[in-house]
Picture 1: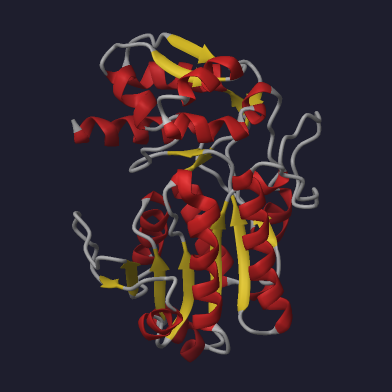
Picture 2: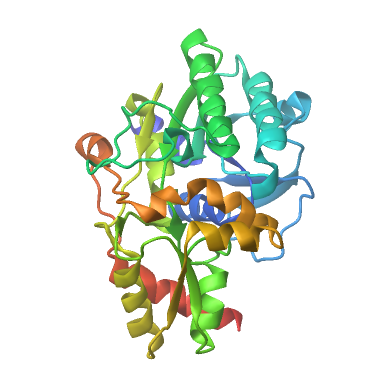
Length: 321
C-alpha cells in the first residue's frame, strides 16, 4: 500500500491547455506534490510556475506529438479550448488527436466540459447528467459529438475516460465569462456592467478552483471512468444576488444593464463573441439549476461559498490593475 501511494504521488500528470481551468487543475496537482507538465502550442506561459511544474510545446491535433508529450503520464487533463467562435471546426480535430494519440496507452483522460450539449432547458427541475443531448445550436452539437467520441473510445477500450461538466464559471484568471473581465473591469471602475437575460432567475455558477479540484478528484478515482459528472457548485443564486456579492466585495454599488435577445442580435453584428453567445441566451432567461448530487454522493462535495469565491476573484482582478 505504501508503494502504491508513493507511485500515485509521483506519477506524471499532463494538462493540455494553459487557460484558467488548466491552471486551476495545475494549482491542485501542485499542492498535492505531483509532477505536472502543462502543454500548449508555444511551450511558453507568461507566468511563474509552481515547483514541480514544467511546460512543453505540442499540437494536440497531432497524435504523434500527443504520444510524445504524454510518455509515462498517468493522467491527462484536457482543458484546452479553441476560440469561442471556432468550436465546430477546431474542437473535433483536437479531441480526435488526443484519442488517437493516447489509444492503447492505459492513461486516464479527464475532460473539462460544459453543459451546452443539453440545449435549452425551460423546465423547473434541476439539470442532471441523465438529460438527453438536445442542443440544436452549433456549439452545443459540437460538445455533444465530442463527448460521444470520448465515451465511445472508452467503451471500445482504447483509453480510459471521465468527463467533468460545469456550467458558467468565474474566479481568478477567468476573463471570458459572464462574471469575467467584461463584468469586473467596469465594476471596479464604477461603470455600469452588462449582463444578459432575466437576472432574477436562478442560475448555477461554478468557482473555477472548485472545477479544477473536481477534475483532479475524477483523475484520482477509477470509479469516475466511463461517464460524465456534474462538478460541485455553491448553492444556486440569481445573477442579481451574485452582483450584490461583488458589490459588497468591491465596496460600492454596481449598476446593471441586462440585454434581451433582440439587443444581443443587434450587438452581434459588431461583436462575434456576442453573436456566438446568443446560442445560450435561454439558459439566462429561464431557471438554470445544475444538480451535482451524483458527484457528491460518490466523492463528496465541499464547494467554495460564493461569498468567499467572490472575494478571491475581486482580489485577483485588483492585483492585475
